[in-house]
Length: 359
Image (cartoon, rainbow, N blue to C red):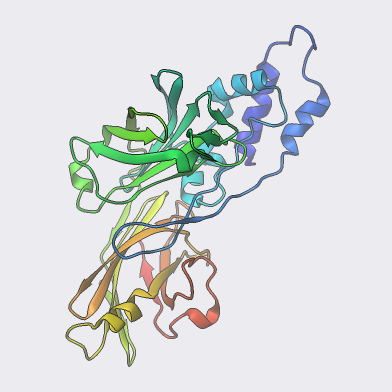
């Protein structure tokens, strides 16, 4: 737990009134907050088009398990507690947004019969729009949802999710998952804004998020407000190219915010005008690992590829590691399986790394 979140929890606990039957919170309960252990959940996400592995975000939140439900509800409703995004372990970009005050608190609720969706918090940096939604339903218990036929995870019970902005609906890039073991009834959504949509979206907008739940014949529509929280964006077009006997690799563009990094790059097969199915597969198994100026790998979130003549063009989305990165190092590597986060030295294509200086 970050020092910011811990200090806000302590301040909140000190400000809470005494319980009628039990007196003030004892020292053991207070210390339980400080000793709370974390667990991180990781998984896979896929997008349409050329498949790419991407890490499902893990999150841990303090307000459950070691205080009464009434106390947890009180903590959750007090703004002093801070951003839930600060607790995300698997995405340094969203965690930075929470720690640096780049998120917006929201209190919008949408209900149908006895099912309620409550939008808690949002963050938007021009590339990603992420938001947290708490779900309440009688057939939902600790993240397990009874759809009438089976009991599934809440995230698996969500279907047909659409993200509309000013009547425009991106055809890919929408992901969602559980917010973590300590907030099992809360969902984390994020929409990657396609590069050709970014100029059409204003710094402040309301998205219409439509979704259905299994077993309920109703489409929920959530109005989610977003405010762009950072103007500290680096846009570089290095058009850097490096080649060996087999491949030509080019980094065309990098767009870096304190939260998200978007990289546009391509890899071409030398001596070819067009690609056979086998050659397309050969290029599809090459991805780009990105590191910051401190040698930290940026977490790969999603990506999309398109073949053109003898090359494969990639647009990849990564979580930014810090708000003051001076340069990036891009390293092509060969994928051994569908999860590309743990890369071994023998997977890198030797001699083809490129340094991209940021202004």
